[in-house]
Amino acid sequence: MAITFNKYDFDGKVVIVTGSARGIGRAIARAFCENGAKVVAVDLNLEGAQETVAGFEGSCAMACNIADEEACKDLVESVVEKYGRLDVLMNNAGIFTQAPVTDMPASDWHKLFSVNVDSMFYLTKYAMPYLIETKGNIVQTASVNGLGGDYMSWAYNATKHAVVGMVRSLCIDYGEKGVRINAVAPAMTATDMNRSVWSVPEKVAPFIERIPMNRIGQVEDIARAVMFLASEDAGYITGQVLCVDGGVTASDGQAPGEYDEKL
Ligand SMILES: NC(=O)c1ccc[n+]([C@@H]2O[C@H](COP(=O)([O-])OP(=O)(O)OC[C@H]3O[C@@H](n4cnc5c(N)ncnc54)[C@H](O)[C@@H]3O)[C@@H](O)[C@H]2O)c1
Picture 1: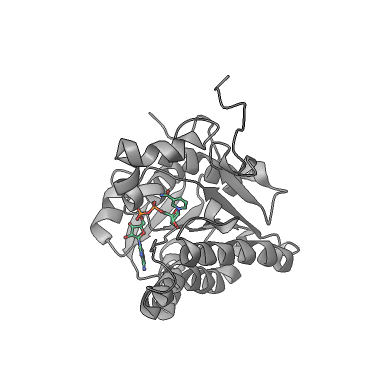
Picture 2: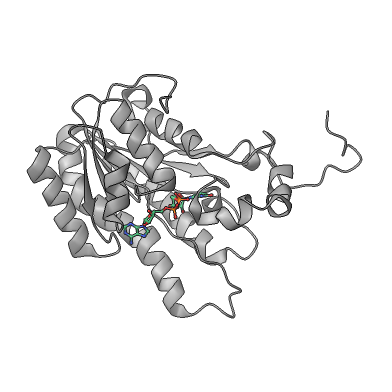
């Protein structure tokens, strides 16, 4: 079954998707492929990225450590050399680390920022001239963690707030040049990143209890929102953070009080 219910027109468009050897990035990359794009699946894990685009003619995989500025520059140059253009930059790859603030080694903090934030700066920097040529767009994977606070996630949340801040400011600089910049903000989504939580019923139950739609997200939910934001259907949308969260961020966090029975 195809990932998107609607058909989007990405025929002939060239799309970079980072972190696409598995998880949310893999679903996004495949959704772009299914809708006609030539996808460059980027990951540290080349084999996984190759598997993502296997069978999709015109798409390919490239290995890249997106935390390294030179590697990002080489990546963008290689893509443009191979395909002659770039239409969409999907900055998706990210990592997660949790610890009390008193226990986190500075190296973990710096690694979080280098993968989750610096990479988005590097790739945007080198891709932007080509996106201006095609009037293309950027979609970043932020998180609901970039819009509020969470238990023990102060460092990861700081990175995702930075991603949201980039989106909201870059859109102002590049709107006139025709380049749109948006983000998706997933809540808990079933991937390898957090398998230790969602695969254990007692651990995932408190999450589900707070989700109005009564289930955690699936990678396809996120990919569908990305397809819309990257498509011409979103042609007048920029600087937005689209929550794909089953309604989690609609709540102000208060307890149900005396109305604790489900309807
Ligand atoms: N899973 C969730 O619940 C959730 C919720 C909100 C936001 N997110 C965000 O969604 C994005 C994707 O998350 P996921 O759950 O699919 O994660 P994942 O761990 O399943 O996949 C991440 C991919 O990124 C790649 N990667 C990591 N560091 C890299 C680097 N330096 N260079 C290149 N590739 C690298 C990994 O090899 C992996 O293939 C991340 O930005 C994450 O923060 C995830």
